[in-house]
Image 1: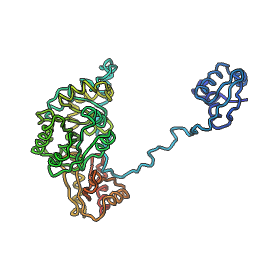
Image 2 (image 1 turned 180 degrees about the vertical axis):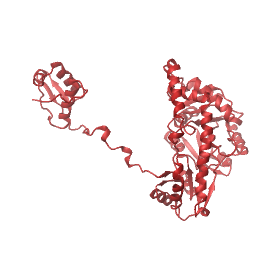
Image 3 (image 1 turned 60 degrees about the horizontal axis):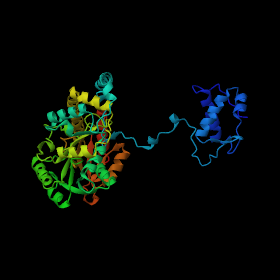
Image 4 (image 1 turned 120 degrees about the vertical axis):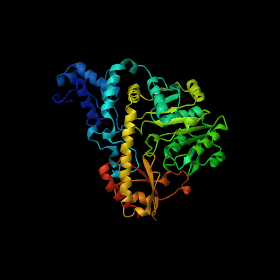
Length: 465
């Protein structure tokens, strides 16, 4: 007869505790496959509990397939030999799957925001206000393109700080640019050829490949993407980041921008996707005007994200569609649900409308300028500084460090890793590896601790020769 003590059942009800005890006996094979269980009445009498308690426990075990019943015979243990054995180790005590990830003294690769730089108090205050003042709106389903309050706030922000004059109705809000790329592909068509910068942000290529999109990789010159090569490629759509190219840091001059717009104007099917991802953080002079702001023919799809200006964990991005494309979007794609919660949308809208975003960006621009200057100062103080060259240090949150060395990029990366430093090289961002330029390190300084910068740079330089 099954015997269990109910003294340590904790917060479980009697039937839940009994169900768990019998289940554990089955999983640990203390009860064999096909073994007959006591009748409900007999087990209830033996354990001094009610028959309904045993009945509920048996019912749960039957629902999950641990036992089965035979009419006029009773209950039997199911064959569970093919079941995956469940771990008896409590979830909280299991080893983390991320425990094998390397930890670094300094990471020059990934973007991150230090917790002290996020406006937690302001954000918390606004969230409480939204919960109090927007309770009804929070329960109303957001339009596919996002709540109008956020789109109006973005429209005003773009006009004031990027010189972009668009209607809120042209703005689509989404959880991350990857989601928005998917919408663009559906909107423009899978039969189009997409041109991507070479070198460039590898995730864009992967997204297009995953969507079975034909893409071509166009090389750059000192002014950005090569227009002659673009013409020869047969591309319909051009994907660029003209205000601060990643990873080279090139800023596309006005003359080249007009050349690109002229290219787009030659066909009704041609469009330019402008990724303006960290234009707010130009550290010398004013931000570069966007390509969209000089587009007179409605050929530019503008994209940006709040992941850089606030934090990478706030997955709120947006795109501005030309008026002809927003009409097509409303006809064909507005059945999609907005992928950003109402709560986040209203909070961000109020954050922008109240002027907090502008203040935050100004503060972070000063912070990152100090970060950059500290990194540059430490680099210039290195005994082997003459063997390196700094490039494109005035835009965005990274710059390039060219190195005179005989070591391959892979060895540079491995040497740095041994010294606790995480780096990436320009050569890693080429699709066609035979054209890759070696011995150029990308220095992303957004997530560094200021007090660690001198030692981080020293460790970096000790890895280069």
